Image (cartoon, rainbow, N blue to C red; front, side):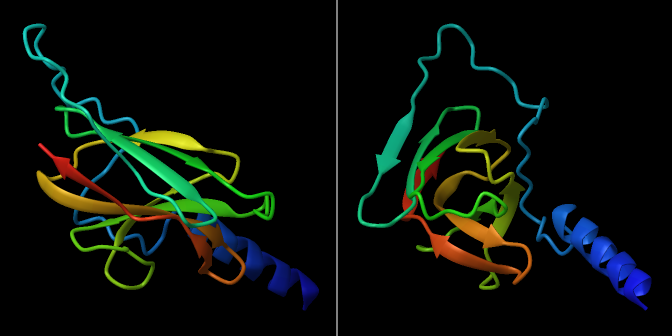
Length: 148
């Protein structure tokens, strides 16, 4: 019986880590090679947004290639076994299970770049994600960027 429970637990864990159930109707890829780099005569226009007041502090920068670079700092209380979700939505304070799109990154990661975002205002947050409880433990500040 223990072997069956262990096998089922392993399968569920693998599905969660693989991102099963991830909403993907707005694609974002950390290694999107389909983007065209800006021409040399086009100045890079980057918007940087940072807010304060939460345990996880998120900073995001966008370029004219519709990609966003994320950097975040975390408190010492972050569990190293947890992962992070980068949540994004057109309305403020995107949250898990409230219609936000998300991408998962390992718990040791503190920066990443995602690409192929739709043009317009997009709100971003990072959450510390506990796989065992399938829930966000804590959220970062909300960062709003105008994706061109």
